[in-house]
Amino acid sequence: MNENQETFTTPFEFNVDWKEAFENEDFVKVFSSDILENYIINKRWYGGKASTLKYIEVIDYFRISSKNNTYYGVLLEVNFKEAFYQHYFMPLSFMAEEELDTNTIIAPVKMKKQEGYLVDALHQEDFRKLLFDSIINAKESQGTLKVVFHKGKGLLETEYKSSRFMGVEQSNTSIIYNDNFVLKIFRRIYVSTNPDYEINRFLTERMDFRNTPAYMGSMSSNLAEGNITLGLMQELVPNQGDAWKFMLEEIDGVFCNLQSKKIKIEKLPQVELFTRLKIKEIPPEIIDWAGLSLFLRIQTLARRTAEMHIALGSDIHDTAFTPTTYNGDYTVWLKNRLLYQFQNRLNIIENSLHKLDGLALDLAHQFLENKKAVRKHFIDFDWTKMKSERIRIHGDYHLGQVLVSGDDFYLLDFEGEPESTIRDRKVKQPPLKDVAGMFRSFHYAIYATIFNNKDKYPYDQDELFKAAELLFNYIVGTFLETYIEKVQSENLNIGYSHEIEFLLRYCLLEKAVYELGYELNSRPRWAVIPLRGIQSIMGY
Image (cartoon, rainbow, N blue to C red; front, side, top):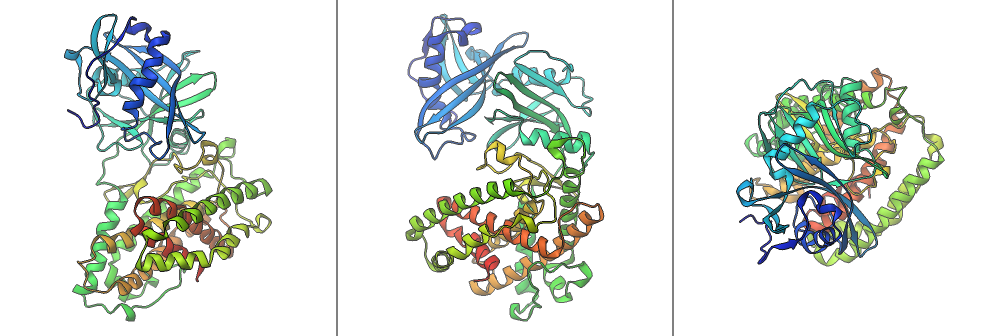
């Protein structure tokens, strides 16, 4: 039996045919309370685990049929006692036992005396085939249909061959078709076009940006409230895994070199954070320690990041993607958001001190002693001094959102920061916010390597942390040199050096404070990483 399967002693009985199920009040009522509440809270894609469920409501649905079966796309509103709600999409099927493709069932039911099971329809191959066929046969005009399919310019496939789930499911469910395409079904949905769909289609169909999986099609729901993106189909890029895994392996090699090459950490040449470095300017001792190939890969990632921003900031026709300047409205939005988040993190840290010890506890006390300076740093954003421009950005850019493909990198998952509202995710921001996100990810990869291998490197923690900060500064310097040179050569306005450094520090601080909440709630031992980041940015 599947771990997510509920055990029910008797089936739920309904005096209604499956084809009319969602027109029947009794079915909808029992389905949304007794059946769904038990099922949904165990799913990986359910984002309300930290909150208390109040009730679930079916707010809309559409019917879609294959030759043999009727399916429903159900849009749910999950209401929480904390006075907020989330929307989810659930494809649903009713299957007799002999037709089941899965043992992950929602519940046994009787529909008009016909026995069977309610199942998440994605687990049925017939439904997966129906989605694929609907995309490859999509016509431009689908009028007032409740569910609309769209076929991308690059989709030349003419028939369904196979489908399977992709690896571990997180917040969405991904299906691989014909070993060539991935259809990502958005579980948590928003009454708005999803930024992942919007940016992916813009980058690949409009801007011909090659280093993200090409847009192949989509599925959306056309409701009175607005357009809701339900699915995004892209090409499947051959890859060796994500850049996070790649980076951990590289950095482990760098730390192993300390011993094998008998490197004295205190004798390594220092460099200030944000010093731009061409490869030939990196001291030979650092190249000997970390290896040339690591810095060459950092250069490639910096170039791809720059090209992404150039593409996102080079459209003068589509207002959703036209670069814009800073103004008072943006500053009010930014400060309100950051001060609210900062206060939230302060509350979490004050309530979490008992979970901390050693260095983490020392850094937490330092953070609390310096909280006025950190807060002032957020308030000191003066838009009148900003000469650069804001653009649509990735918004949640880190090593886990990058695929390694041979010697190259592919950038993906443009949904934006999970904690942000859908409106906030579409606000134009400094491209350097993405760069800062990647820098924090480098910082994490370096410290995670130390934490995960603490018995492997024969150095005390202080020495390893010194090496960590030094390596971080060289990686940042190499990335910055390539990134800045590339964006400036294409006239993307990120400001001059003083403004670049201000924005980087500002965004790094924002990101580290954001991470602090996550670490204190889920793995307090790792709170050292964002606390150390805040310390080095603020210089206290």
